[in-house]
Image 1 (cartoon, helix red, strand yellow):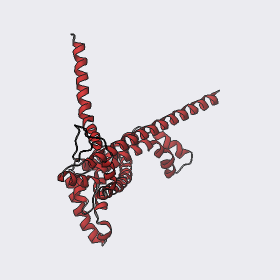
Image 2: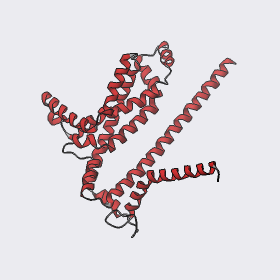
Image 3: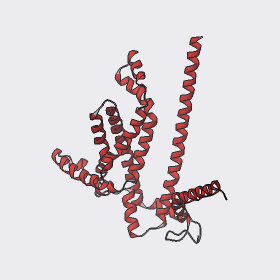
Length: 288
């Protein structure tokens, strides 16, 4: 028994434990969603059933929470990507000490506990909407949750967009301006297509972060309900297989969405490679 043999066995053992730790809970949820007992049970399997999925889609409270979570998630994604893009563009225009201070300022919300963000959002907008006389319009749980989540999710989006933006060749903008394009046209036709992968990635991250957020949502949602708050109240009263069915549906949708996103990303990369090859071919033809 040599050292290489022992090392390989240790690595295999570690990988097995890692994947069990990572995928084990998901497998348990999947099994309990199809098992017949009224309490989540992995073994013994008393029978296979789809009744828990039927009950899930007939649960009005759960569906209402899901609808609210989707609305909040989409709104947070749009708002956070827009703020993240603006923050990243400003970052590229700053240098020296001001850049460090600005970076700390825009990333600081990530370091603040979600409970603090939720409470501060409710207190601030309660007084602010009262001054404006718009409390009946803006002071509701859905709007407050969107504002609370966007305050820190936008920082994640900014970091993703900034990482892509740092690889942008500024000479492309200068060339477009020299050819007579206006600044809005350069932004729309040159910069945004380059940032499209980062914008899509940050939008997906923003939606998923919003969808599963609990700390800030608990305090900002007020009388409304999201899927996370509904699940939290259900678990306190005792879990049932409908929660496992919901987890299974979310896992399947997440995997499908990830595969579709990866397919679109690879198709975009192939298209870019084809355009680059065609450009090189045309340049070579001109030289000849």
